[in-house]
Image 1 (spheres, protein in one colour):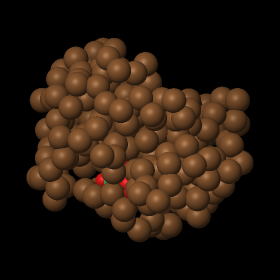
Image 2 (cartoon, rainbow, N blue to C red; image 1 turned 180 degrees about the vertical axis):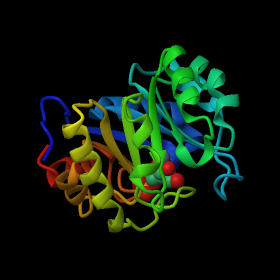
Image 3 (cartoon, helix red, strand yellow; image 1 turned 30 degrees about the horizontal axis):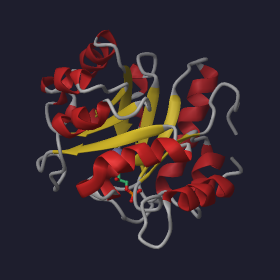
Image 4 (cartoon, rainbow, N blue to C red; image 1 turned 90 degrees about the vertical axis):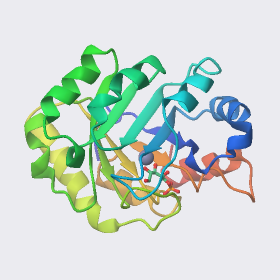
Length: 226
Ligand code: DX5
Ligand code: ZN
């Protein structure tokens, strides 16, 4: 279990499962119930099979909340769009190692643009692929589904990678958060936290038809003892 004072538990709500016809109200509600970050899933129909939205949507709600914006770029050539997302108020930007041949440069562009750099690994990508950049990032995002859609099933086989990252972080005295994204709910969140995750992304288990956001958040928090 990681040091909670250094790596506090945080909850990031992915708006992908929210009601887009009332996105402004949703953003205010997310802040009111005490969620820590807003997660924007940007998909291009090329790196992932689905198209979601771009910087314009993020920009549209930036002035409605002081919550940090956690931008997850599931797009090819993400370096071409960093400026747009920085201008649209991203505080943390995650880029996939699978899309970045010049990963150091891309991460440095994010930091010099004033946001925290985060690197993402798909479920089948090993930790060794990002070991050389662990000194450059404020967060590592471990995908626990193949990116592209909400409401997919959690892949428990990624948990050893979380443990591996936690051990590397200890051994090398590094400081990155470990975020997990995909299939996180009250059943799977405790497994992720036990492995070493401290930032939990969730879309479909937070934005539900059968219960208010405050209740689904409370369930998730209870499950991980937060
Ligand atoms: C998957 C996205 C996730 C997704 C999570 O491609 O990166 O952030 O919205 O959805 P749930 O929590 O429903 O698995
Ligand atoms: Zn995401």
